[in-house]
Image (tube, rainbow, N blue to C red; front, side):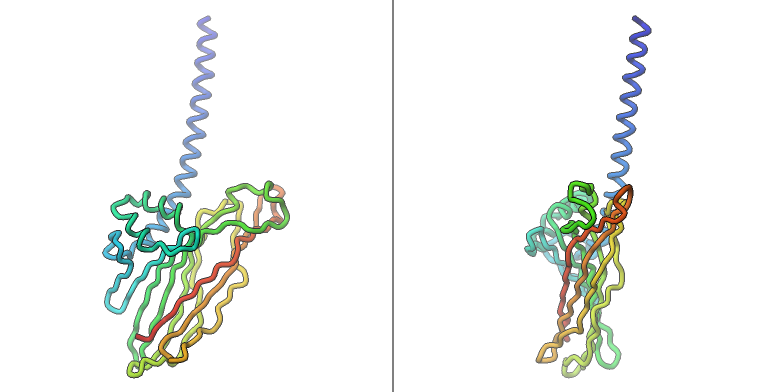
Amino acid sequence: MKKILMVLLSISMIITLSFSSLAAESEMAESQVSTESLTKFSVFITDLPNHERSTLHNKSEGNRTIIYKFIDNEGNDITNEFITDITNMSLKEQYELFEQNVSCAIKRTEIITRSGDLSKTVEEEVYHKCRAVTITGASWNQVPSSALEGKVYYRLRGSITYNPNTYKITSATPVLRVNIDWVDWDPDVRPYTKNEYSPSPVIAANGYSATFKYQLNVFANLGGGDMDYVSLGYGSYSDSFKISAD
């Protein structure tokens, strides 16, 4: 009987250790993904006014102005509501609310330089939550759910030059995408952009402002096993902004 009890105890300990190990590995994997997202999110919100969570979403420092915008999953502007809600929350709690409620976020930085005619440059760091809308080479039930979602951050830049006396725009440069970061994608998914489009800025008839547009499509190849020829499409993402000569 003693031997039987010892064997059963040993088996029980092995099973317990196995489950503990699996749980630890799962927690570690989740922590790694969360760390990546959390770090990127932390950097993204660094320039909220005085690094505080208030209903003000503009921050000006000399020739530099920063404006935030948060869009929910239904396409509604929830900027003031979101910034108010994350007041006094921990970074993790702020990110959890961001993850649950925000599908697109924009951090716009305006910079004015003075040399002859004035030049105003706008940089926008844009966040989009991506979800697959098309699959080629496999059926939906063949693709793991982890491959269907991901996040992307990219930075856009556009500028105008205008006469400091009349405030009329003399030239404008098309939007340039200066970087892109893929966050929380399945390890077997290789995301990429396609059909990036940046038309010439449209200067208003009165000459005091210019509208900039940019568009890209997000795709990914799914590798591993029999999935080497599977292509996922996550849809088209469009962004636009206006620069005024003031």
